[in-house]
Amino acid sequence: MLSLIKAALKTGLGSMGSILFGVIAMKIFAIFLGPSGVGLFSILRQTTQTGLVAATIGGQTAFVQGIASRKSDKQHYINCVCVIFIISSLLVSSSIAWFAQPLALLLLGNDDITHINILRLLAFAIFTQSWTVYTASILNGFGAIGKLAFQQVVATVTVALFAYPASILSHTYYGLLLATLLVLSSLASLLYGLIMVRRLPVKVALWQPRWHKDSAQHFFSISATTLFTTVLNIGSILLVRMLLVNRYDLQAAGFFDVAWTVSMTYVMLILSSLSTYYMPKLSQIHEPRQQQQFMQQVFRFVLFAMLPIVSIVIVVKPLIIHLLYTSEFHAAQPIIRWMLMGDFFKALIWVLTMPMLSYVQMRLFFWFQFCWNFGFITLSYIALYHFNSIELIGFSFFLLYFLQLISAFIYTKKVMNFLPSLNLWLQLSLSCVFIGLISLWVWDDNQLDWFKIGITSLASLGLLISFISKTEQQTILHLLKHRLKS
Image (cartoon, rainbow, N blue to C red; front, top):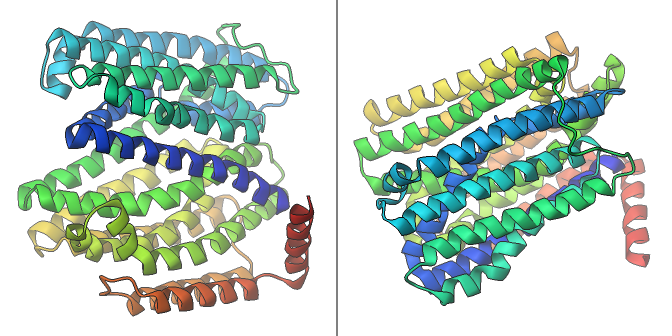
C-alpha cells in the first residue's frame, strides 16, 4: 500500500504542477491577448493533441503495457515500436504540413501565408511530441515514476515561462508565436525525456529501429482498440454538444462544457496519477492470487481517496464555477450535481476494468467503451428531444456509470475471479450513502456555505478514519513523523 501511495503522490504532484502552470499561462494569455488569443491557443493545442493521437496510433498504453509485461525481450519491443513511431509520426506530421493550406482554412478560418505557417509549426510540434510520448512510455514501462512525473511538468513550465514574452512581442503575428511556443514546450519535454531514459538503471537503446512481427502484433492488438475508443469518446461528446446547439443554442452547449470540464479535471488528476503505476505493475503479475490482492489494494485506495474528494467538490462546486467562470454559469449546476456523483462510480470502474488493458482483453474493453458512449448519446437525445431537459444529461451520465460499475463487478468475478472483501463492500455502501446524502444536502445551493464545507470535511474525514485499521493508522502517523523530521 505504501508503494502505491508514494507512486500516486509522485505522479499526482506532477499532474497538479502541469495544471497549475497551465492555468498561469492561460491567465497571461487572457490578460494580454484577450478572448481571441485564448481561443486561438486552445484551437492550436487541441489540434496538436488530436494530431498526436494519430501520430502515435493511440499507442502509449500499448507501449507501456508491452514493456512492463515482458521479461526478456523488452529491447526487441522498443526497437519495433521505434519503427512504428518513425513511420506514423512522419506520415501524420508531413501530411499536416503538405495540406497546411486547406487545414488552415478549416481550423483557423484563413489560408494566408501566416496561418499556413502556423499549421506547419504545429506539424513539427506533433512530430516532436510523438517522440516525447516515446520516451515517456519507456520511463513508465520501466517504473521510473518520479522522472515521468517531472516530465509532465517540463512542457507546461516552458509554456508558462514564455507566455508573457509571446504575448507582448507582437499582436499582429501572435498566432505564429503561440505555435512556436508549443514547439518549444515539446522540445523541452523531449530533451528531458531523452536524458532521463539514458539515466535508467537498465540500459535501453533508444534508436535501434528493427521490425519484430510478434512485437508489432502485440502493439497493434492494443493500440488499434485504444485509438478507436479515443476517437469514439471524443466523437460522442462532440455529438452531444451538437445536439445541445441544435435543440437550444450555444449557451446550452457552454453549460454542458462547464459540467464536463469540472467533472473530468479532478477525476483524471487522480486516475492519471495512479495509471502510471497500476497498469504496468498489474501487467507484471501473472499469479491469480497476487492479481486479486493487488486489485483489492488499489480498489481500496481509490475508494478512500475519492470519498473525501468527491464529497468536498460537491459542496464547493459554486466556488469552482465562480473561480473558473462567472456567475452566469451557475445554470450548469443541475448537470454537475449528477455528474459529480457519477464520478465516484467512474473511478471505481477504472480500477476494475484495468485488467482488460493489462492482460490484452481488448474485445471486452472495446464493448465496455462502446456501450457507455452509445448509451450516453442515446439517453442525451431522449433527454433533450423527449423530456426537454438538460439536467437529464447529467442523470444519464450518473445512471450509465452506475450500470457500468455493476457490469465491471460481473466482469472481475467471472474473468478475474475477483470481488471486494465483505468489509470493503460495507465501506463502499457507506461511501455511496454518504455521498448521496451530501449531494441532497446541497442540491440547490448556488452560494458557498462554509458551515456545510466544514461539516462535510470533518464527516468525510471521520468516516475515512473509521475505514482504516489501527495498524494502518499507526503506519501513516509514523510515515508523517518521519517526513516531518527529515
